[in-house]
Amino acid sequence: MVHAVVGAQFGDEGKGKMVDYFAVKADMVIRYQGGSNAGHTIVNEHGKFALHLVPSGIFNPSTLCVLGAGVVVNPGRLVKELETLRAANISTDGLVISERAHIVLPLHIWQDQYEEHMRSRKVGTTLQGVGPTYQDKAGRFGMQMGELLDVERFRERLQNAYHTKLQRIPGLAQFAGSFDEMWEELMTAREVLAPHITDTVPLVQEAVRTGRDVLLEGQLGIMRDVDWGVYPYVTSSNPIAGGISAGAGIPPTALTRITGITKAYTTAVGEGPFPTGLDDEVGAYLQEKGQEFGATTGRTRLCGWLDIPTLRYGAWINGYTELALMKLDVLSGLSEVKLATAYELDGQTYDLPRLAHEMERVEPTYETLPGWQEDLSGCRHFDDLPAAAQAFVRRVEALAGVPIRYISVGPDRQQTMVMEA
Ligand code: GDP
Image 1 (cartoon, helix red, strand yellow):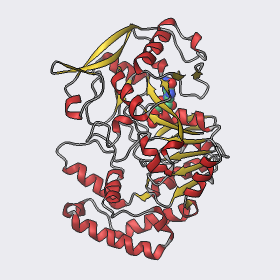
Image 2 (cartoon, helix red, strand yellow):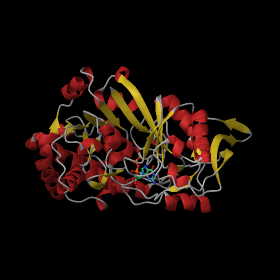
Image 3 (cartoon, helix red, strand yellow):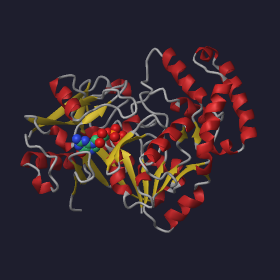
Image 4 (cartoon, protein in one colour):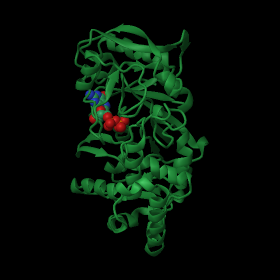
């Protein structure tokens, strides 16, 4: 079965926990887009890990972990991640990197810093070089991981890229390091990564054809999708399920299960519109109780009520076959809880997201439900939840139009309820 786990909001929904949960029985876990600009936090019997590039299946020794062609790889950062895992006695032999994946060069990181510095309207990039790498890929200037295997040719190509980029972007020089510095860094990483770089097509094809359990791990969420998110406050790739075919090399017809991951509330980090964001004591309560700080950047996430138009939108575009509702425990202790059911803008009602400049002005319409005080972290079955929490779950499900299959009440694998199908 080919099963995708995708973010139903702005990212940080808790995909890492669910991928780790599903990966236990997966034969293969594939990342299909993005780079080290976002991270999953995984808590399991080995400890607590912030993974940025390595698929979460790495903890299971029999799972093959694939970085697909749609991923952009910062070699130095990937090596650091592998070292952290090895230091915790986790084998990293099961990692394979598509020879087609593009390389995030130090040049791209310098360019990211320069471009964000020059923008009057910041897009809130994490300065990881991901955007510029995708720009070069689309512009056909990019370099692929497979090119690292032929050192002589690679050096020539890199020299060319270095000089061309500095010529094309005159202001870049003040942010740029030297060619030798870049070369050293890449060659050091190459030593570790070369054995992992391969043609992933036969591996993925074999797994899909023989009906193995293949898990696709999305990064970020639909609202950060370059085509369907709040452009320009988006990432440079397609985290939506539609990105899987292109980024992992899997035919769209092979995808049979799509789990949308959503928190019981909403969070967003960086710039851009966030209609249900709360700049009040409830927002602060959610942030504190939900520990809403970025895994990659440590940036504080703004919090607010669950946004149903976004869930509905994702249900259509991603085709969720089920939802996982995360962090329900964080809503405990509030006298009432709210759900944004639609947006109002200039006298019009919208039940799906709009363009970013309109999203900045929309007023959410809220439905208010009774809150609950009980600590949910020990609940293991739906019936263990207080009646108000059960009613909240049922209402989200009805409004989103997708069954909630999993409810999460804590970071641990055990703190996950499975609903009857
Ligand atoms: P991802 O990028 O979507 O994987 O999300 P992050 O890893 O950035 O954020 C999820 C955070 O919430 C992590 O620290 C998880 O350990 C934690 N977490 C996941 N599920 C739950 C839950 O149900 N309750 C609580 N309290 N924390 C959770």
